[in-house]
Amino acid sequence: MQTMNCPIVTTPLGKAKGFALAKAKCDESKQVFAFMGLPFAKPPLGELRFEPPQKLQPWDGVFDATKSAAAPIQSFYFLKAHSANQPTPLVCDEDFKHTSEDCLYLNVFTSNPDKAMKMPIFAYSNTIVVCKVLVWIYGGGFTMGSAIGYNGQAICGLNDVVLVVPHFRLNVFGFFSLGKNTKCPGNVGLLDQVMALEWVRDNISAFGGDPSNVTIFGESSGSVSVSMHVTSPLSRGLFHRAISHSAVGTMPYLINEDLSATSKTILKGLDITATEPEEIMKHLKQWFSTFFAMRPPLEIFASSRPPQKCLATPLGVATPRLRNTDLKAMDASKLFDVLEKDPSNISLVATVDGKFIPKHPKELLKDGKFNPVPYIIGVNNTEGAGVLSFRYPQGFKEGLDRPKGCQRITVCRYTDKTLTIFQADKLDIVSKAVINLYSAEFGEDKYKWSKLLAAIVEESWFSISSIQQALAHSDAGHETYMYYMTQQLRMHHDDSCSGNVQQKPEFCQADHGDDVMMTFGYPLLTGKFTTAAKFSDEEVELSKRWMKSICQFAKTGNPNCEGQEEWPKYDSKTKNHLNLKWPYDVGSDLLAKRFQFWTQHVPELMK
Image 1: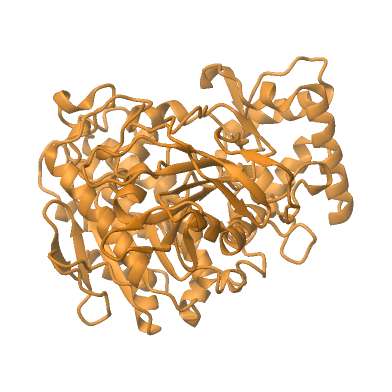
Image 2: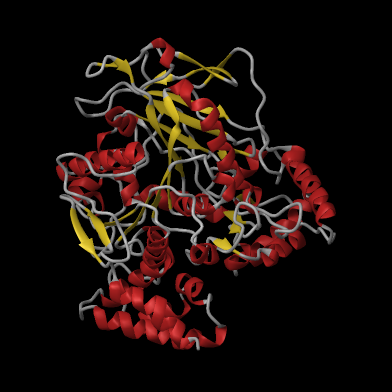
């Protein structure tokens, strides 16, 4: 945090004061100001638990926006693994383990706060420039994640944009559903995102942002969220461009038409026997009130104990083991051990609610009814080979043998999530066809079966559905661009760059989340990181160029910049895409043979 004076901004909700960040590691970087933990909705507590977000009332005085807000309640089970895989930059006093139900806050980064103060005046025009707005939606499978780690120091300082990063509710608090025709249809976490976009529309001009030019972008489940905003009637008019980094709405497991099995499991675990939705909601709210009364939320959910000493719960959070005297909680804790044996039964994800998601994404894709915005869709080429490999068999990094590889492909949860969209009695047929196709395309080296498994995960989860989304959006007459990242970050493969970052298999090139580090200019950030790492000179240049492309798209709907290699539009004829690497180049007809396999051959097998 710098001592430079930060302007007090005046929004329709009240005044707020942030702080100045150090400048990014680039001579042309401008001063960026951070406003942390700004509320955008009423706290979703008590009777507002599980309810859509409610508009916030104005406040008196000057809001202190120099401290980060608590993250949404979530599990810390994967936090250690995530931290080991990539460095996370900190802005001020963020604490990953500081969580709360009271989480509907957002962070704003801008080089242009309070236009009335005439700062900055750009020399080339001697006029005030209103910045385009980027709204980031974080990933985490709708069960984990927060605004922590997304720093606007570089992307705002180098590109004259305003960055907004909102929190939204996760796991049971954001995605519990009793069915689309009930008073608890689910998806309140997605409605939190809509409320944040409404806040941007009404307040962002106070930070120098242009409410008529807003780009939403996100990664993983945040990327799925973006694709759902592109098709949702509730989001129409709240944004004007969109970027999906790794995953879209037709990804096999992050959107479910029916969460009744999960809901029944949770209700059973809480000893709630009511069958009417209104009565169920009454009991749920009472149960949570009683639960939190017995033990403060931060003590329950922000335990710093190692994951192995916690229990995974049907709430999608991790809690310490509870005392025998906590009878209501003990009923739930007994269930936790059972659910650990079958995690698929506690999948709390987005659902078809009839409102925000009016139909299953596959139907929406066929209908071609999209919000008419330019759209970038991208994936990384080995997203299944690194971060997501924690569930693979021992020996994956060193190279699986054929028996272990074949067995794991047949029973792999990731593959099952893809294959179970077909009839159960056809799974063996499809599994054999998958193995035959992929094994024929990999060389006979020691990594063959590991690479094969990773490729199936990457393509069945990310690439195939992303290509389908790009084709549909383009065919509907909307400008579409696609990228395919192949740049291998040295920190994961070179001891001289790795610091404390975990090394990945040599066949892992661009992993899940690697493009995020380039998007937020990690190589150019100053200040603390959770894990030490170094970036190569070409990674520095790639990040600068990629941020420029992203921000040019935010400004104009076209990512092409003067003096850079052309990034052609994506359409069903040329199927051109950008190969995101240093230097840029262009490819076409991405994964053509495998796309045909998944979209034509597999459906034929089901007949």
